View 1: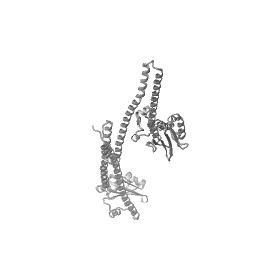
View 2: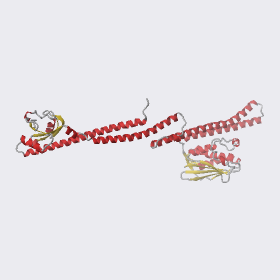
View 3: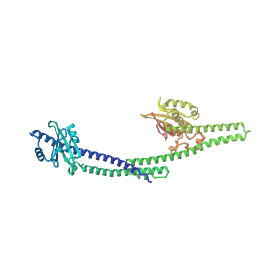
View 4: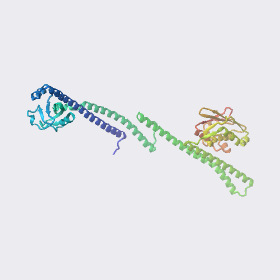
Length: 471
């Protein structure tokens, strides 16, 4: 059995609810209007009773002829007039000649209500006297010790008078029909969007290919259609992002495997030579051992950089622990740590940072930014060069400049030097012991601190790194 669509379920539910509401309204209107007309009719008969009661006070005596003439002079079509004593005895009835033979009326509902409340009425009660149905209205006059009861036959005329005006019901039903048609159109459009979205969800779940433009345009106009289009585009971006991440992970895995293979192969080769040649010259043996140590040190540096990058990737999904970091003092200490390496390459550092630059960030990550840039300059800028570090304090950021006047980087490589394992000169980089991850660490650390980084050719040669860190 084919399931009912969401739009049809919604339409039927709302129509059912609306139908109940309209039914309750019509019933209430029917009851209210009928009560109103009954009240008007009762008031009319009560007025008749009171007028007769006032007239009776002017008569010297109560006679049948006077009452008959009053009824004739104050006509109401089909009117029945009955005068009843408080004990229930009938004293006059214009539709019976021998009213003294009538049964006691004390327990008639309209009579008992008149005695207790002053007036009373009954709708459509059959008369025990005439066997006809009447609308009765009775009024008690204590001064005259008399109950005046008037009644109109419950015939076609009275029934028509008490009938509810069907125009109101007709108009209500007409409006309801128009609203039902309008709502049907609305739910149809809503159902199209939901059906299209469900179809797309099934296609996405099965991994089927789709054209985002075709899928987005298939949704009808409207708020839900726009939301559905955004969902399609968000899914497309997520899928592309996942594909890019998968591609990057594959490339990264290949690069890591390739980078690890070189030092591991070197260590394995040197150790194999030492094992196979136990009588090797001690000087040469020491040389091989030192080379193994150098390769193991490079391997350790590579693993440490990979670990640092992985930690930063995790931090990108979480908030890093921040504290006040004095970058100015950190740079002074770093230059002192690297004094021997700088002297070996006859390099100078012009530290032009203002005193007490305090940033909120992770100490180790801030340190890795400046240390990797310093190591990169020492390794590749060339001998006799000058490294200059500056900072401009802005409202929301510290804008840093880290430049040298060395050999520089060819322009075609500047946009890619922050990629993992990217090398301008692969052979030269490995010879100098670089892991190819230093600038990638710098970029990720800068991003984690709310900034961005770029590299340009320096005005006096070399390369100028510009990066920002949120205050």
